[in-house]
Length: 254
Picture 1: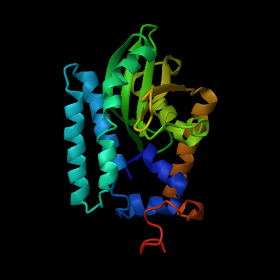
Picture 2 (picture 1 turned 90 degrees about the vertical axis):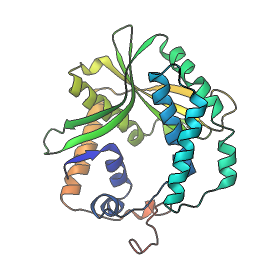
Picture 3 (picture 1 turned 135 degrees about the horizontal axis):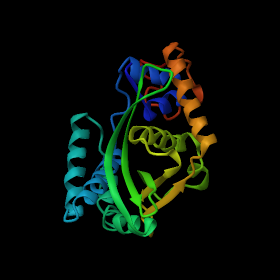
Picture 4 (picture 1 turned 135 degrees about the vertical axis):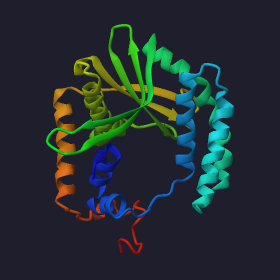
């Protein structure tokens, strides 16, 4: 174990035994589906579309989505072709408006990086924190803004937007990005960008997530707790998380 990511500690928080199966035993559970394929293709458009103003966004999406669907077939994942047809009519409002929404939200910003890798020391542990930040921009006031794109159907309700575990992703990204670049932590802000597949309007929604000192410490404590328990080989099953687990009622977790 040389590094840990937000995704890994999120799985540990859901169920330590699932974490063992997925990250220690290296057993494949979730192989992806059309939703992840759509999200990957949309993320690629957002990344490349900000680096290349002349990118044909619609064609880029179609090419990437096609690749992802082929990959699912190779993994023998069953394709819901009705859903596939729906998705083919849902990507255009996102890829055609996300850049305008980004500019409107930040008014005037400079793209600092896309898909930036983090691989920073975790204090108190012989581990690195690994992650990939979708987008970092800088505004005229000198502040840096970390943004993570999330594809979804109609959007997020207030409860999900305020979910502390979901928000810890951005909080940890902020901490380790500021550490990597030696930027004062109060000069960095965090945001989610929702890319909404089934929304009738406002297909891109960007909103700020606060990440002050107390929340920062809580996120670091959460990270530390996960690492300590993983190192101690404590893998208790959380039966409240069984319903949607890919390992549920399989030979690996009966």
